[in-house]
Image (cartoon, rainbow, N blue to C red; front, top):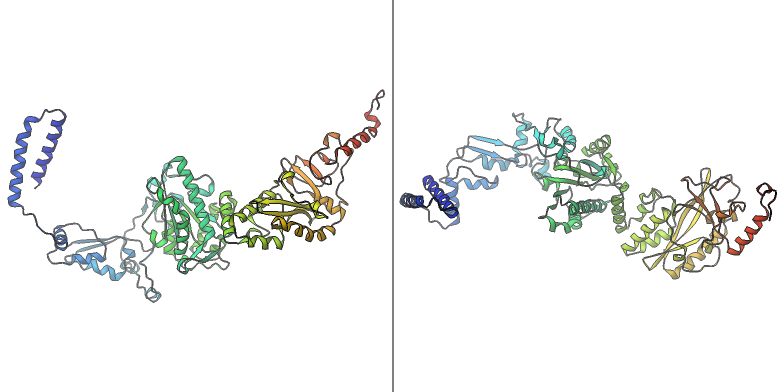
Length: 606
């Protein structure tokens, strides 16, 4: 048979050479004759089976094979008559094989050696019955032998994980016995798929505003974490489109409910799996034995008592933390995991110690994703609380009336809610609409001097005003959000606020109307508590400080170049009173007659 194959290969070579140059044409005939002779002898001595039954064909192959690959359970098919005895059996992932299942391949006839390969520190076989689980039904033969002290050999070099990824699991699960292979130590193994320290090789991304809830089949899910995962995957996809750099992403969660929620959010990327951008979302159990370039872990649990359920299982944690090649990003509630007294507490503490702990809401893109998720969940109490991350970096303190919180909770259109919050974030940063674009309705009463109305989505108006509060040793301007209403409801809101505004003293009214300009922004003013009144326009200031803008006549504007905003005093850069043109001309005339005499030369006058 081997001679015949060699002869056929020689014939093929000759035919190729003849096709190219024709130099070996004379050698072709003897080679063909030799092949025919060998094939003729084979046809007489070698009998080819004429089987058509699949079972008989299978038995024929197995009975003549010297190397067979199969699962543990299907090895039962090797117990057939006529089979040559197997001397050696190798069981891979032996730590996931129940003892009773191990008995199947170990009973093969003629067996002399058995090699079990596995890791008892990772997930065992899945056992759904709680009673069976308590009886150690899922224990493997591998684990039993390890427990009994049977000699074992440790494969102590890992070639998968970046050293930053392998550092914690190596110390926590393997007593630092695992060495990093030379390939993962190379500089080229340091991959940056996204900009920012938060997306380094190893990081814990704290999601403080998540909420666990029941999902598919009563399995838990956390939609805020799912939104953050979706945002990260979207950013990775944008980077892939820009760079065309292939990347495989694995999203791991211990809960099927969370897996389903994330799959729904990232399903649009499945079409690119053959083009170099692959996203795989699975449970921890489903990811054992797998690996990806980037692994994102969604821990889901977010509660006040530190309850993490089966997330505390060390074997499950080991699997999740050892799947990444280049980057491992862990998402979770730092507070919940710290209170859990589990291996995840150590994960958080280790991340803080290594300065790999980041708050998701401090990243602009992730904060937006969190806010959108909270809006969809109608969790406005989180978004509008005193320490809301939406306004943590704002220039203005923002206070919300009960009417506003009730109104926004009744808005069914999620996009309108998002637009309202976006507008509030802009206002708190100091942005203001041009005067001609706001306050479309003319109001009577005191509210006409203080109330602001900004259109939202062409259907509603955000109604707000500036108020003054006492903060330690200063009075401070703040934003007070009154309501979000339809245009025909604005007069009613104004009428309700008139009684409150009428109780304001003249001094407080002036403070509320004062505007301090810093570049293109309006920033809040501060006055010392001991100041008797809001400073009035100083008419002895240079005429160049007067402005003929379209601000309301009664408002006072201070223009600042420095960042600290305090009450106007004699060192103010400028103080402008916005007055009608006729009044300005009269003031200019009076100012000219009251110039100090030392400013006028001996031969000069009016």
